[in-house]
Image 1 (cartoon, helix red, strand yellow):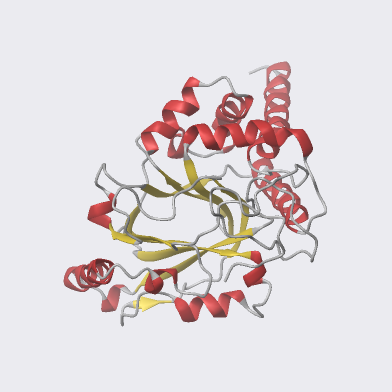
Image 2 (spheres, helix red, strand yellow; image 1 turned 45 degrees about the horizontal axis):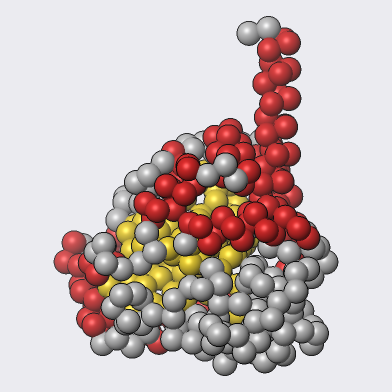
Length: 341
């Protein structure tokens, strides 16, 4: 390869990363600058206090500024786990889902969406996803302790993570018309076999490892932008229109992205709750929305295995065991100063 060719490849990667920054802003960082009349709207939405101050929120779409999401991972101790023990855990989860009481899975006061996944690979683990308004998390002295105490599975084989992981949420988005029950069942909590049915919601958790070097530094930069959005220091104006159009066209109810920094590298974990995952991919590949077209190219450059997220059906080690929604979960911010109770 010639030096000129190497130079163009380096230029292409840098340009791609810069472009992805724009895409990330388009798709993920929904601005807080648009007017909204959602207080008391016909959706019956519950107001969301963004936890930043007492001023009314003018957003039309809930983002990471208004709500937080967490991943709580618990390894399954191989010494205390055999096939019967794991199936016992799964059976207990299904039994509790059958009671149709979502509180055990939501776990904490005011939690609005929660899912439980199992990884059955050589290093098995349970992963709990939970969404909570920032007006609530702002009152927590130590979120890690609050969530550790609320982990929904109690079993002798369940252990804390062996090594502390630097994990932060960098993206959160909510469909403004997301359902407040798991349609069409009208139930609040479902177990894995019911989730696998074509009749219900699709819930997925996907891990994407980043290439070393520049992609990791880019991820750190995006995380810093996310923190500025959460603190209300950054507004991104008219680009919200394309972002909102995309999430509504995909019928993506809830979407979160987490950045994990480990000694062996960086990973992104993407949580998705949608009416139908196949529809998400149909929309993604059929649209000329710049959010989709540019992200497809750039993600192909920065991910170690782009097919982790760019191909359908998804290849993921995480199997959904249960999913729950609060009957009053929020859909939009409100001009009201109420918090979600």
